[in-house]
Image 1 (cartoon, rainbow, N blue to C red):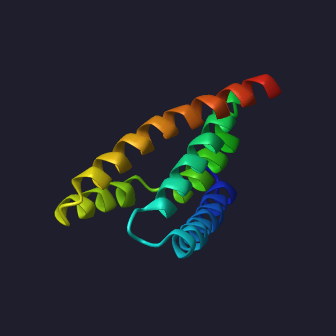
Image 2 (image 1 turned 90 degrees about the vertical axis):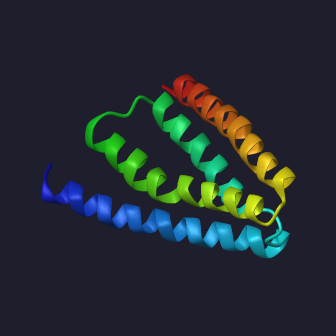
Length: 122
């Protein structure tokens, strides 16, 4: 892997994480923090974009930069799990279960939709 690709991963990955911070913050300010809507929006939008990229059949450096650097740094599995655990710890098991279920169902649906759109655009 050449230096330009590594630099691209660093720059694009940094931009993806900043975008995640901004989107999560914007959504959370509007909806409050009682339920992790910010993380939900980030992960669902990331799933649809990654599905789209997969449908477009990117390969090599383009797939690495778009999929791993951009979408990988934007989405956040660990925050989703931590927020679900926090809700459980606060005895909000219904919200925790809802967070897990809704994230999985909408995430898979978003990825499938994105992939179908990407395949149609090829």
